Image (tube, rainbow, N blue to C red):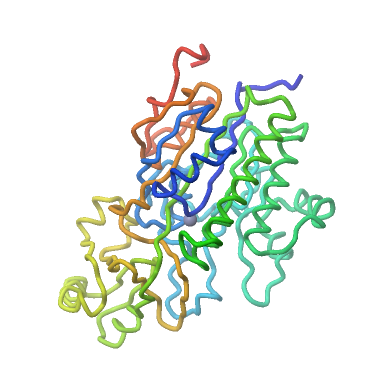
Length: 413
Ligand SMILES: [Zn+2]
């Protein structure tokens, strides 16, 4: 029998780019039905602004809004760099506040992380780390990974399992992550916390659109992948001590009308710059009032659904440095100068969108079984996991999701 400091191991599983409109489909899938039966579920988790992957995952792992964790976008603003050449936020040091990984590691709990955004160069915080890092053109993927990942473990896994990796396309990388996650579950050193990020659904929706045959196939692949993790837990006989926290970050909407070159248009008009967040954009201008007046005047030409003022941005806890932003009309997106975008699906919509309500299952351990709770904020995930792991996330913005706990079930709480 393995000695444990805490009664539970937690697998935090992020399924990228699905949301409330997908809830019915996901609830009918066998692997996700297992979570529903064993746990508490809601399709009403309020995500954060901006509705893009890195800021959201940083809110999940810190329990804080972007005005505190400081990951304002997937990538630092690099206005004159072609998007294929841009660096993203790849290192854990980019996050401005304490993470769940840090809280676990301070309690000497072991952590693994697989393709989780902003988790690179984690050092001792994450013992088994395969971070999400994208090789830029001309870079060799494995060499780049060695800089950001847990080097010895990566070298070992490459030796043992590389043959099972079909390619670097996200579909295949997610399959490979499922394999590595199975191996971690089977390992003598089953990690106390595993964070894993599957993004085949995001990739497919960007490229093929939402509701397409390709999209449906990606959702089925996701179910099969997740089932592998459940089977590994069952096979090892550790269902009782394993908690699955399964979440999504945002949905996607179809881009039926194409991308507006907002950044180039603002440059030409000498107003300032725009940084696309997909279906919306940040506006950077020396004179914010002048830029706001210009946007208002050219609202229909620029396909603006609405403008977010500084006051509104502070209210929704947007990243601190953003003082003006816009959301595009339905079916439109924005693209930066010198960049091209031909996505058929995208995110970056406003918080009023149904796709900004995300899915969350809290399954196993002290959570209520077969229970549907009213909702939560996405920042509540970290303190809720901290509670079941017996670790602290003091002072974070999120609250423990008390409604999901069955206090009668386990005297530990
Ligand atoms: Zn995402």
